[in-house]
Figure 1 (cartoon, protein in one colour):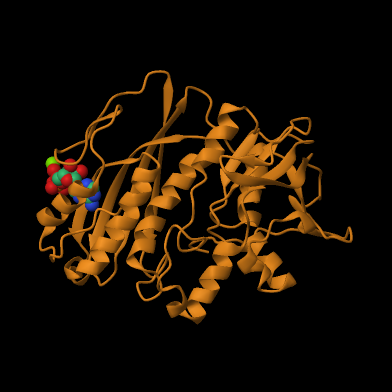
Figure 2: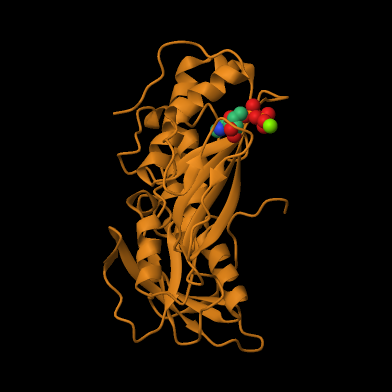
Length: 338
Ligand code: ADP
Ligand code: MG
């Protein structure tokens, strides 16, 4: 059950921080001291590397309060960071949340309850202790949130973008294009998803960070390179290729399209899978002789292509259609400041 806020309106930074503290999980083996002092205190994990990642969630850029429920905004704020940990095979330790909130949002009981509930429910589900942050009044009417995540892997075992070799197979978890398709539908009819919950399949509103799959890949030594699909398959695959110094071929017919992407029709569905961002699935490579399980950490694994050697004048990525036609695949996912 949700720990819900008593029906009271929060007034002031201190009351808000107290409310956040009440919802956060208590100390854990690694988080000795969480919210309340000037710094959190963590036990340095023996035999582990620390992984650290930060992600901005900005109103008007990453979400809209007239489209996204408060619960979805809280969930997505944290899911982005958790997905980065998943991509490296990490296990979450702690999260830190810096928020700038307009007074109108803080005074809106239902909104604050949804935002904090969406964030802390996901944190608690994956063992990330909300251990600190910063709270300030927004200078605009915009909600701004920055999440910092700390995670760990045994020393030297984190998955990276750089290990793919020619001859490796290319895989992804789950399904693709669902987040872009759901976002487009959200823009057309924001009311359709009013009652959406994290328990249902909502790839855009409530993405599931693939922490279990990432950890399984790392533990079983299956992946040669891995990253999460945040900007879109084409853009993230380009990162993998550049970091590994290789090229990739993608088989269009093998791409596991989410049902919402399939509803868009063939061309738009394929475009959503290739270039639509925010699926938060894992994209990884493995040696061809590895026997890849069909499921990892509760999610389906699909082979979608292969890694080939770099060659002069050959495109970094090639898309192979069902009839064998080959075209250069351009990175057309999301990019800020372009
Ligand atoms: P200081 O002014 O010394 O930085 P604050 O008054 O900002 O301390 O914060 C008090 C405590 O509450 C700290 O432990 C801080 O990490 C925590 N905290 C503040 N804002 C948040 C937040 N949005 N989420 C989680 N913890 C928070
Ligand atoms: Mg201080």
